[in-house]
Length: 177
Image (cartoon, rainbow, N blue to C red):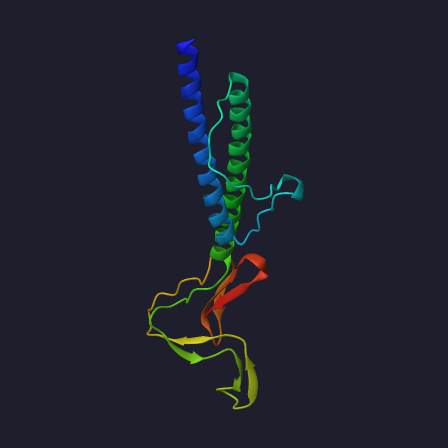
């Protein structure tokens, strides 16, 4: 009888540890979901328990109750693991999108030569649309792509010199001359 009682006590201790881990996973899941901009589903109204007070006095659990509780916690851990895996997947997707979006400057320590928009054409002197951004840098300055992409054009082009055009995710393109 003492052997069985000791084993039940060990199982009950382990059960408490599992409950603490589930609470930790819940808290972590809430924080990560907030960072990912994902709304977690609220518990259905049928599962909400109205507030109840009083000191916690644990009732002894028999072997069957312990096993049911361990099984329930095992399902909870599986559910939370799946949820965290989904959140990780969302973060990875977001990271890939950010890497593919052309958002960095192609040159370091440059001054802005001419911004995007309408301007006086430097050759004809007429109002014209400038569809790029000019950066002033010295000859031989390395130029890096503003984001990951695929080179779709590379040639010598009058007015630009060496010309490279990249296609990025989402249909964005950048050109470098």
